[in-house]
View 1 (cartoon, one colour):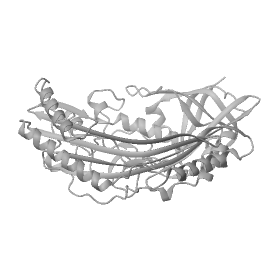
View 2 (spheres, one colour; view 1 turned 60 degrees about the vertical axis):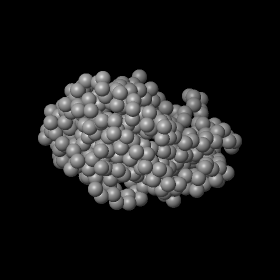
View 3 (cartoon, one colour; view 1 turned 30 degrees about the horizontal axis):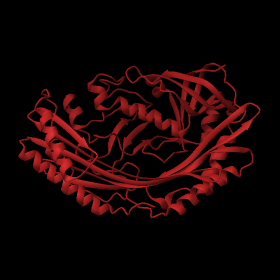
Length: 446
């Protein structure tokens, strides 16, 4: 589909360019330097109503240099990894460093924290797929969905396939690369009745194309999800239990991780400042990351500072056990890096799991939320208010779809009131979780 991508050769080339940039920075008088480089190549096809709409071939690369002169820092970047561009980036970073103010927390991560082991985490699985084959898969996906009775239109199906290389090096002598791939197939369909139109979608996203869900299953699932939204009403207003579907529950985990990220903490822009050791979730809930899980979506042996990654427990039996820190944020807080420059990797939950039907029975009366809209989350206060759509639950059973309502609460209360987790775990992203049942949020309908 695209020009052949030799990941090993690309990694070797980037490593040589990174090493050259580090040496140039040393010669120009930098006390320390770190360089990151990447190249990604991919293909995407989109079809709609049985016709090809777009075929996209992409190739992106980037090169970023940061130098330290004493406690002064200068950074420059380029989308060109050619030798001349790299030399210019190093020179510009040095020029910037001479004019910036001193920052006591600046500098490389400590040398003893650098990764020294680089196991094969099985995250690179190229897919040698022709354009015609990609189009056929997308067409088959859409056709399977459109064949379901009741589907009246389509927003199309799309397939994307890409691989890339990331290299990081610094003047501690650290230099390492990581190859990776990602492949996905999705479909969005439309159905209508006398009350109006509804749409929904489904998708599959994997490292290894052999694990991609079949086009037919994705198309049929997208159709079923769309049809079940027909006849939507507004729910009653009140304080009610709310269940978040797995893909939305992952977003709640994301809000928590943002709140314990070092950048938010040292800026005092988090509702979880000074919260280490304090209870936040029920005591049966533990949350961690496993960055070296083989084949997982976010696996890596080192973070963006070159620090070795390791399993971190963020919530231990309901209590906040660790923050999520890069080298810089750790210094600002007087702590040590947790290997999280670039964020958390492969977040997993340990807790008793129940079937969704059992959770609905426990809910009795409330809403199951399957879609959220808007950005109403305040990371400083924890206040949460989002537009939503989903299903009304009565007597422990789904009754009918609902839309055009809001759910509101505060993340502190929502986490404390977590009443149960579903066994319907969504494994498509970096955060693996099932449905979350939260006992008591404000639902504002009609």
